[in-house]
Amino acid sequence: MSQESYDIIFAGGGAAACITAGRLADADPNLKILILEAGPHSEELFYHVQPGRYFGNLLVPREIFSFHFGKGGKGTNERVHLVPSGRAFGGGSAINFVMYMRPVPSDYDDWETIYGNKGWSSKELIPLLKKAETYQPNPNHASHGSSGPIKISFASGHSNVGANLIAVATAIEKDHHTTNDLNDFTVESINAWGPIARYVDGNTGRRSDTAHNYIYNKKHNNLKIITRAKVTRVLFE
Image (cartoon, helix red, strand yellow):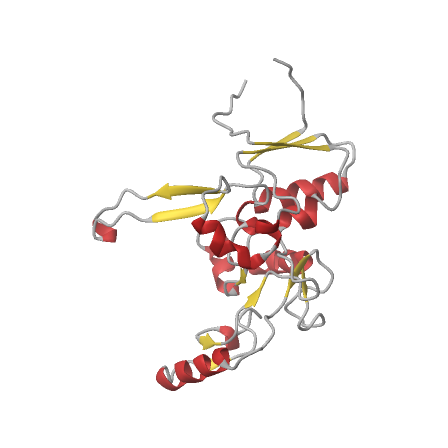
């Protein structure tokens, strides 16, 4: 068996790994980086880059999902939950429903103040979220990014179904208001009704995933990808 040495090895080529590996490869061409992914490549495959194919992917047996079964118990009334996750290069970003949702800043702050993870507050993390995205509806918005590789857009309004749904919901839940941006990190986006943006390039209609926007589009010479390679254990000497 041939053996190679790497400076950094990623066990899993999911969304976070693609971002981190891609940025490291850009930052230091001398780093030798390896990504091991249990699933297959997703590059330019129509059932990955076309967002609407997600529904068909659930029906057609493919290797791009891993299915995790819960054990059940008192908390779930003995129900066993099935949780699908991404099993392809790009992870969940390559197969999900492309819904763009952010938590409120206080959720990030809790990571630091309650759990003691210094540097994980909203003050540190929100600039990184902005750096990763281009918010196409309003690139100059203070809470969103304007030059990142991940594109955010809204679906074209070809019907009034969404607006009617929000109007009915607001009429029923009178303690909730409406907003045009559920993800602007302000109090206006809390307990509100509004349209959901998506991880889709509004100009091309393509899924905006991490694999195509941090790895496949760069062709790094210092980064190697091995697919269908599942990491079973890690040995420390």
